[in-house]
Length: 492
Image (tube, rainbow, N blue to C red; front, side):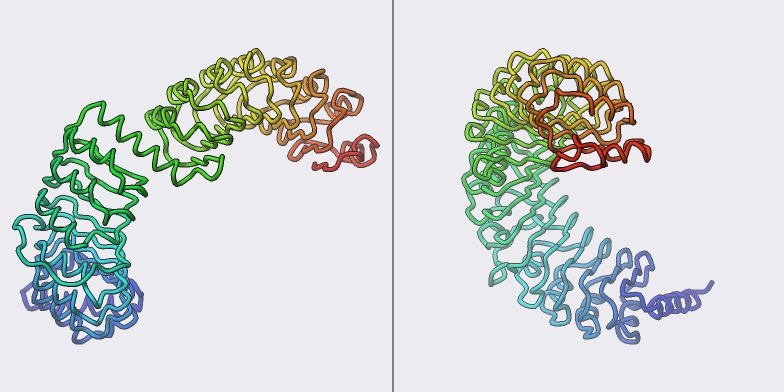
């Protein structure tokens, strides 16, 4: 194919993609060059577009100036210009353009943008809706600026990625002083040239009070910088601090973990309730949580759906700050029987009234530990749903005086069968039980008849039997029996 024919083929391909009418136009890897881009913006109708991808197209500042001048792009919210040859002059044309009033996300990964171009974008008075700016692997930090763009940073900018540049300590200091980082919630400075001096600049900057996520992976920060960040009084909203592949030791790592926990407590402690559900807490995080003095005021601690295991729970059980704890939710964590044993032997949780162990991998050994516990003697609510205690584990629990204060017992989806259910109905320790949930357990009319003749559950007023294989006659028994009619709530 001749050069002329190849260009005609490319233009026909571009025209066809535009005419599809899709609000997303992906022209990545078309290698159109500036000429192709100029043809595109001059000849095609683009007003319907909201997302435009021009990555890998050998574009330069000349092509970008024509793009910036195109009045037909006023509905673009996402503009992707990765892996081109765009430098500061082209970026400044874009920063000054009035043709992108709703642009929300701009990606310029792997171009030739330096500090001047980047700061013009951040301080643009026309790109007022720009919230996400991706500038990985550019030329930021290669040469220190002596003049900076005037004005304040766009107040809507909340996400800035500068990964893989040449940002130095002095360059970072300059950026902080310009106010460029002030509106950010997420800042990624990974793979730069930042040392402890730069980390100290970050730690002492009041302009970073809004920051929630700070990425400093693969820099040159040692213990001095790590300790400065850990002690910062300005990083008060920081939820994520990624410091992998730096040069600090275990003591600094512990201090950074403590910072993480202080922030978590500050943002998630409401009165005496600490909700840390789904916070991706691992064993190291739980070890840091155990050290947090703020735990002393917590009465309800919920840790549902975190990846920690029994090692983290072991540290928590040794915490000197749990004396006021009344309710503990460990649902959907992989603590297993070892975790149950730790809880059963933990004096710090002797005041527990509510314990949720749903889907924690607990078998009959864990149930035996709970049944024999010398400290878990005051429980009023216990949830062991979606575990695998077997009939043996249920028998251990129901024979234990530790169940004597239970008002609520949940054992959903634990394969009780009629035998396991009968261990509940025959227990002499459930006289205070008010609510019983035994959904999806293979209970039949045999179990119902046992419940009907039992005098042990004298306080029961709520019973949930849904998803059990009950027959018509069993359901009639439920609705006609005087004993079941006295219940406030009966579900089957």
